[in-house]
Amino acid sequence: MSPNIKIVQPSGILDSTKVAEFRQEINESVRNGAQIILIDFKDVTFMDSSGLGALVLALKTVRAEHRKLFICSINEQIKMLFELTSMDRVFDIFADRDAFHQATAAES
Image (cartoon, rainbow, N blue to C red; front, top):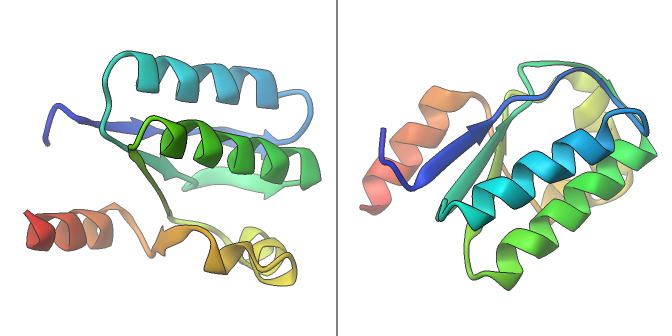
């Protein structure tokens, strides 16, 4: 794995009780020089609107530094939330880490 890729893997319920920790991890990743941030939702069971808001802020933070943010392994509930809010058109979403690595390897 390339050193400029940081994988963030939240777990459980991504709601208002966890967004500060999530945003801190994204901000630290950007500060530490990650060019690409992959958020792996494999272990997230539920995400509410505050989790989605934190994700949008994370995207803005990453893009402001001219970096890239990708998402993978979303479950049906998160997929539905993304579709209802049209966020599936805003984020680059991969089925899983393998699909992400294949796509990014093809770009290099």
